Length: 321
Image (tube, rainbow, N blue to C red):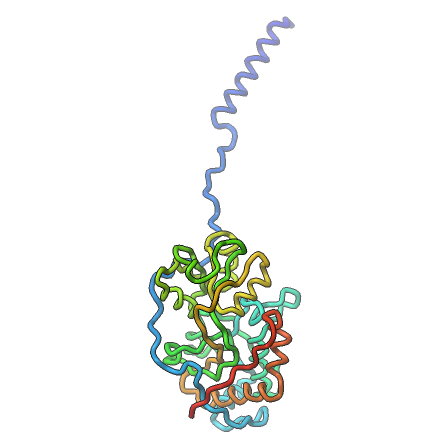
């Protein structure tokens, strides 16, 4: 075969191949937008929270005597719970230290979970006779209204607004609201939040102090506090504001963060029960009072919350009626 003819044929074939490559025969470059890493349900909160009325948020009914487990007064709320065979409690599974799912065992653990087990033990003489139902902060009121649970033990702050819809036990843990920010972020106090994006969990009281600021930040609401952690790690927000023990729980999960500044709000966690359940309120307060006197509260604190520092002691209750 003529060498010149072979070379010419090869040149034609190469030219055709190169032309094909430039005419779209190869897959088109990926033009899809980057996936938005924003947590599901996240969005700006633009409406300020309801203005709180004037009330003693920590006042609760005086405890009554604790009946023998399994022998609750006839026609009482406690008797109805015992008749159902288990205590149904709305809890959290996303707040480290207070209510979270242990990845090793799959079980729910935390300070609030232990409080719930103590109440179940007082009702049945068996702390395992309990059904823990995970509810978001925004679902706490509806879970009680719809009778999905008998009570809520979920970092539930007693407020005047909430007292219109539910009854509360005495406060079992006092919490100050603070700020969580990355180290070296320049955010060291509430005044540094002006113009920043601050994450809170929807259905909590955390947005109230932020809206009260003279130069308030942009408030971003999410479903759970761990969603705030993800949003902060991904740079979607500049800081998180919530109760100090919740924030310190987030620090335990990310040591690049720190809790800063003086408190910008204060509150106290209490057990929430359906409105008008006076007997149940007195019973729960009896359990909390027993926990104070026999050292159970301190034992639970040492087991669950020692990362927060020395025990502040169980809050002194304010009883009325």
